[in-house]
Every structure is written in C-alpha cells, then in structure tokens.
Length: 167
Image (tube, rainbow, N blue to C red; front, top):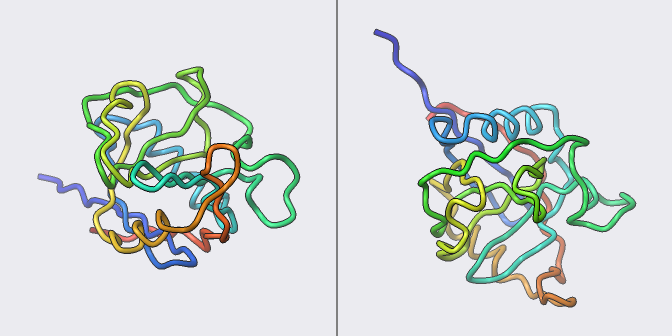
C-alpha cells in the first residue's frame, strides 16, 4: 500500500511566511501550474499588487516585479489554463486562481481569501488553503491601500521565494 505525502508551499514574503496545502483532487491542473511556476522562480520578486481587507490579497503578476513594464495585475506566464470549478468554498484562507472575465483565463495570478467570499464559489478555481501564517495574512491585508478600487497597496509586500516541504 502506498501512502501519498502531502506537499506544502511556504511563501516567504516581506511580512513573514504563508504555508499552503493544495487540493490536487479537485484542481489538479491549477496545483500543477502553481508548483511548476514556483519551482522555476516565476513568483520570486513579485508583489501582492491588490489588497482588499476582509476580501482577499492577490499576487502572482510578473508586472509587479521591480523594474517590470506593464500594469501590475495584467501579466501572466504567457498561457492560460482551463477552469476547474469545484465544490470547495471561498472562505478565509482559501487559495484560488485569479482570472479575467473569461473563466478559462487563469495563468499565474492567485489570491488568498482574507474573509469569506462564497459569492466566488464555482466561478473561480479554489485549489488550496492556508494552513499556517494567519497573522501574516492579516498583516498583508492590513496594509494601507489607495487607487481607484482602493486596492493598490501603499507599501510593497514582496514574495521573496516559494519552497516546497512535506507535510
């Protein structure tokens, strides 16, 4: 009998570590895509470019790297992946794929729910959850914001690296 070891992602940010577990049983393509991008360093040096306290923190855009051209929030890996809507609810700590109005437009951007956002259920692909770092999630969500949507952080919260560890 084989046992499957769960893999966790540790996102090291300038505010501390966020540890996530994945849901490959309901969103295998999104889990694989996130891991592939993280393992090749795609996320290193990106920032959480959209923060809405009580809703979510969003990152994963290559345009948020220092010196990058392009509007943060509009970049991706150069491809899109098909939606994997599932029964997992968008509650605090859930990791989900950001996308445009096209359901099959997710690429590299992701968000972590800071509050319950069940109105997103079965419209966005939930593919994991925060298992450690709740205070870090709060610290990021509490960064002052401005801009048209009042979601542009006034302080840069950078993703330094993402490492994978066995659960």
